[in-house]
Image 1 (cartoon, rainbow, N blue to C red):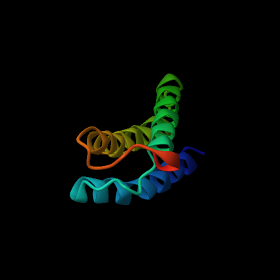
Image 2 (cartoon, helix red, strand yellow):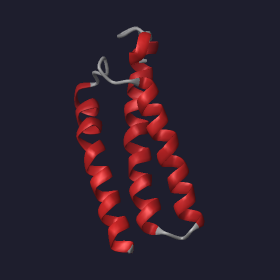
Image 3 (cartoon, one colour):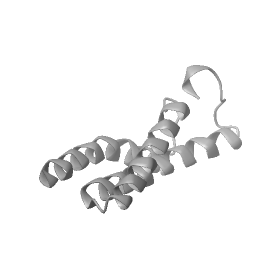
Image 4 (cartoon, rainbow, N blue to C red):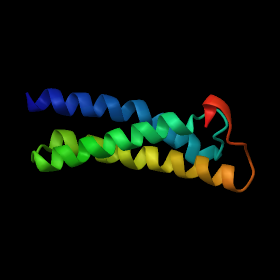
Length: 93
């Protein structure tokens, strides 16, 4: 069953990498939801901690990379808000 975990983690990671790469390249985050990516970050962080506690690399490795990707996106989004490149309002926080 560990292989299923590795496949699931890899697919999850593949889902976040394009957004992280695009955000790092363009530094544009207007269409990125701060709330959604903050929740994804928190969820992946908790899954990573759970995986470490269970000694399950298929859980903590994939979620560790998702934590990094979402942290980059949230960081750039917050930076853009703080320097005035975009406003923090509505559902697209």
